[in-house]
Length: 120
Image (tube, rainbow, N blue to C red; front, side):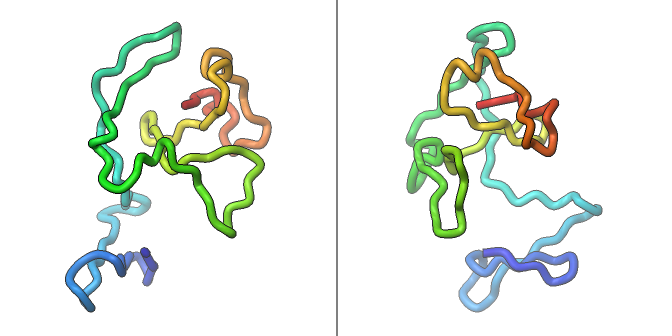
C-alpha cells in the first residue's frame, strides 16, 4: 500500500517491520513504481501486430495476464486483467477478441482516442 505525504510516497508493505520504505520523484512527474520488466523476443505476426511469449515461471504467485481485476470497487463493463503491456510508457488497451487486434478502432470514451488503437 502506498500513501502520499507531500511529494514523498510511503510504502507500508516494504522495508523492515515498523520501518516502511519511502521514495520520491527526482523531478516533477518522474516517479514510476512498477513491477514491469522489458520483454524481448518479439516476432512480427502481421502488419502492425507483434507477439512475444512469457513463461509462467517468470511470475511468483500468479500470472497477471490470466488473473482478472476484481473487487467491490471495480465496476467495469469490460474484461480487465492485472497484467499490462506498455509502449513508450503508455498502457496498451485490452481487447477481448483477436479480430480487434488486427482491426483496432479508436475508442470514443478514451482520454486519448488516437492511442486507443494500440491494443493487447
